[in-house]
Length: 306
Ligand code: RIB
Ligand code: CA
Image (cartoon, rainbow, N blue to C red; front, side, top):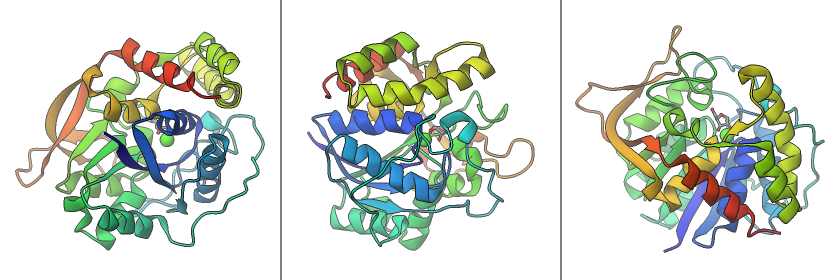
């Protein structure tokens, strides 16, 4: 079975890992990508999505999306984690293609309406484009096959004690997305922080596939520097690829179901919590993971590259 996916992304080093995994997977067809602010600006996000598509030799439509959250003032880009151009110390990469003229939220709605019950949305950045798409055409919730989000977490935060970065960057958008009645899997920090790679893992894929693994190995050194200075260990969490691997390899995840809501103000802004509101739909929340299985799946898929 081929999964038709739209990746909504802020590339971003772990976004690059996720996009390469998806592009190389024989059962995934990336039918579009949409750029959003987060790790980088929306302009850089769209450009970097094209950089990654061209590097993996695929022609994928890319639409530019939101450059700011719906309500709160922007928190600022995460250049201290991903580098000023998104891929560590690499300078801006040139591209041949260009983003579509169509804005991201309209592209998402058009694609879902043209391919009803076929599209899986994979947001791996702030949820602004997805909330804007829902507001533009609420009927898309019933026509979307599934939504796999990298974001949130029920037991931990990363950018604050309580909040995960993608949700913290636009808590109002995330709350709109979790309130909608569609099939969401929230792949959050509960599982993504357990899937970790080391410098040796990236050295190996860098040597075996210089164009794909080599690019990741060069970019990830900056990410390792961040983890070393913040967590005292040279390695990294595999946030965004874990969300895509949840689509292709659900057997690695132990999933609970919970209605979810997002705290949108105060010290806990951006925290995802279980909701007691009976009107809220229940969503899937992986709470445990076969971390070695997911990591091996990622590394072996990149090793099918070039
Ligand atoms: O908290 C991790 C998430 O924030 C990942 O999507 C990473 O790329 C950043 O956007
Ligand atoms: Ca991301």
